[in-house]
Length: 118
Image 1 (cartoon, rainbow, N blue to C red):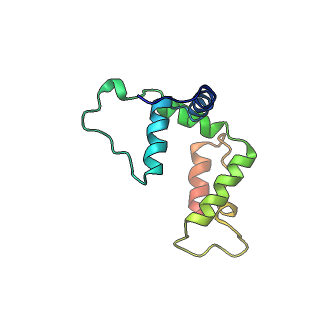
Image 2 (cartoon, helix red, strand yellow):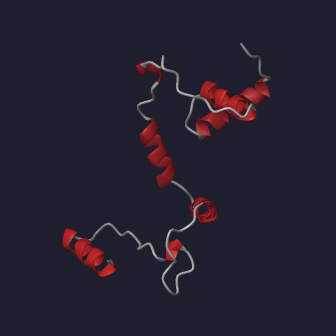
């Protein structure tokens, strides 16, 4: 058992809510990170330990990002990952090459666009 000052507990609960995790898991993760250790999934994990809504919350978090958060993620991706091929002439980043996804195209329009790209 660990005693945490009430003001720290409030901040911890708020942070856990923001990250859509339970406070105990957040504490364990932070302690493990501080100790430079990765938390391994225990072989004794039961179905009660599995959060069935985790994927839905993760998708919602991605869909609800602000333009600033999206830009920050793109900047991080550009810093962290290197391209296997050179970009086409005129493209400054991979995001200049990736087509905008509109979602209203027919299957034939998508197939035609893919043929044009290859």
